[in-house]
Image (cartoon, rainbow, N blue to C red):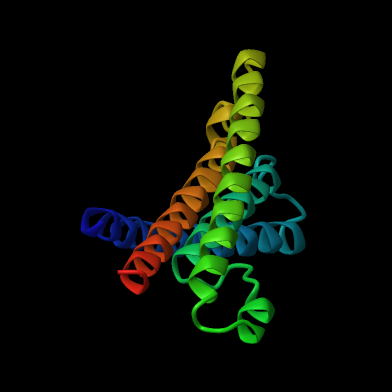
Length: 163
């Protein structure tokens, strides 16, 4: 369990660093595109496409990081009305549902990415589309992993209470 927590913290650090780099890239490229369009009536033909994919990456990395920090969607309303003895069971159930949902979405996204790979589509910057879209199954898989870790924590709490 300690290994999983260390891995989770390491992933969170990498995600934070990637988010900073992606956000700075998004801001720089967006600002450059605005300046080029408004001052010189030109622009980078590939910039809008890259900006869209940067937003996609930021969204999934941000969602994964929010899951790590337990700031993702939660069902706090139920927990407030339940007794303390029921809350670990509720946490177990909710994390099981969330992990299962994210795992199913990761699998569906992986199928989509495989189809994109088979199509051979390429972005205007020369990068294969499936590579930049791989963040979708990866993001859902990371969230599933984190919800599964929370589920294990809830199981440990239940074991402690019942022993």
